[in-house]
Figure (cartoon, rainbow, N blue to C red):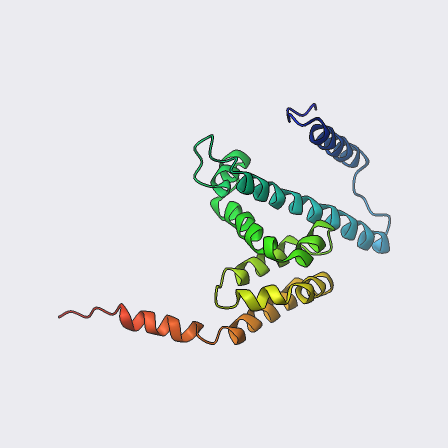
Length: 187
């Protein structure tokens, strides 16, 4: 394929990834039996998770180094959305993950190893976006990494949402107060 990336080491790594995917596509992912299917699903998922972590890392590097500015992009999120041809929502998820993972090294490492999936990272990113629980969430970094690695997504997400509701004592009051403050009845 021949990568156009300037850094030779990175270009070689990308070429190897592409060659590996070509081999995988040629061999096919046809499990021998049900037990093998479980193994194949797990292996392919771990590789996908690791690659998702690399995608998020690209956003982090572009943002940290300001590489979006020379081309006139307002943010790394905008640049990635345009160049990668992904939705604004997807670019936003990646940017939100960057912000959370920057302060949560255990989750970041588990994600990079393929132990934690993109869905779990997105859920953690949503919780991290809530400023009222952020400090307590970051303090639970190791616990969240361990839980995300062993629990199914639905259970992990439900527990995390419940924890956010319980930890965000002012969330409902703030929303109600905001509704009260912005009322404008006219006759």
